[in-house]
Amino acid sequence: MISSRANPTHRSATPTPLDPEPTEPLLPESQLLVAPVLAAIDVGTNSLHMVVVRINPRIPSFSIISREKATVRLGEYCDKTGALAPAAMERALEALDRFCRIAQGFQVQSIVAVATSAVREAPNGADFLKRIERALGLRVELISGQEEARRIYLGVLSAMEFHNRLHVVVDIGGGSTELILGDGQEPEFLRSVKVGAVRLTQAFLHTDPPTPAELQALRQHIRGMLEAPIEQIKRIFELRKQQGSLTLVGTSGTIETLAQLDARRRLGNPPSRMQGYEFSLEALRTYSKEFRALTIAERQKLPGLGEKRGEIILAGTMILEEVMSLLEIEQIQFCERALREGLIVDWMISQGLIEDRLRYHSSVRRRSILKLAEKYQVEIPYAERVAEFSLSLFDQTRGLLHRWGSRERTLLWAAAMLHNCGHFISHAAHHKHSYYLIRHGELLGFNEEEVELIANLARYHRKSPPKKKHDNFQHLTDERDRQIVMELSPLLRMACALDRRRLQAIQSLHCRFQLLEEAPRQMELILDPKHPNDDCALELWSLKAKKEVFEQQFKLEVIPKLSPQAERTLDPFGAAI
Image (cartoon, rainbow, N blue to C red; front, side, top):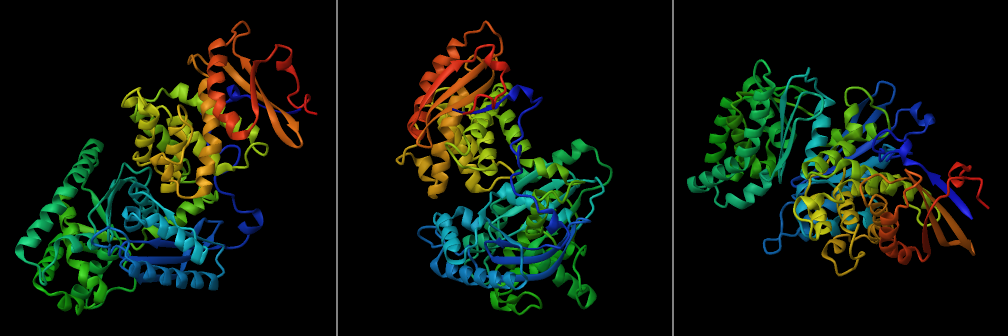
């Protein structure tokens, strides 16, 4: 026999998904003595950007040693299908290959890369990311709009002090605009709105220069998309009763171009560093009016705009103009750091290098899961018990039935906490509703692949096991991801059965394996009742039905039984043979 034991009742709170090991491996102590070099790549709708930094783990801080940019217009979709165009993908691959070579020249320890709006929305976006990995060996994370906003916020905080006063951060990209409200601590508001400079130029501006009708339609669309989120920001600000007015911080290409244009006209030359440079809504309206009267070729000749930015600057300017008008803010301050630097900060947090004012970000996954659970009225004590049993089964079967690590353990915990959220819609088929709510729940701290995995794990906590014909299972295009769901969803099924009466009748579980030719062929699932006289008949009956999928997946027999009183006092490893 092989025996292993876990007692979740010794935990005073919900088990953290990062226990017993962190989601990402921490830097070895030897590497903390040197200054690691890291690269971060942002695969955006208009441009691809890379920043290479040297990290000082003692402070902790980082200094930028190289910046790279390639304007590839990935967001130039195929008109008929909405897919990424072959020419745009080729341009992006060439740029990424160049970025990787430059990063290698700096001997980077790691490259962190994310894709945003264009790839997120394209039907062939996931295939494109696989193509990048095959061609370059570069793994690019696909992140949600909410997650993009969170990491932009981290980047801004690495460059600015908010002094506990609420600031609005606006980042205008090619495909979307991110709006963030925060005071330097946890963000009060994160939103990604589908208004971007490339997207709106393609959708509304077909005449050169644009007609009054096109401009009116564009302005109405921008206002319609921005009104609701900006009203929410203003309500939060009013509730905080902060003295003075909101401060507006702008990041990324469109706003940087406008800041440089303003500096040229006001100062003669832009300063060597644009960090903290301010310009006014009045000046912005002047530039917007000027751009509207010019052809694309005329805009491209303006100092600092160039060929690519000249095409899209009008739409980007009109977005910023509406943001400032709706917020009733007269000045905007430019910040040089945004998403790419946010990726660096996020990496430093994952390595345990930042523990002070950004400490809350290290638990962003846990808090995001609990927030969604509360939103959909999940019975938290029951979900916590299911999560405890799921992780206990994961830990005790690891190395024998599966070989997944801390990342997959975290995803199983998240699925266990949210598996019943579909009851918010209806009891009937609630497992399918859970999939939908999780998939569209805008979980923070997870990339799109991880959200899809969590949703699928929750989907299969009952009824049918995973099948290739299921639409949600088909969304898992990576065979490894499908295997994760195949092997971990049976653990969640059995964990659900262990608190069938929602009375916490089972206080711990103990797995014992019978080996045959080095492989487990039988697993005794020994349950410790909370009360000695409780026969736990309903839990055992529920397990009988729930264990079938587990048995089929791992090709062994599961034998549930209650532990005798004497056995509960044994050394858990004393019975191992």
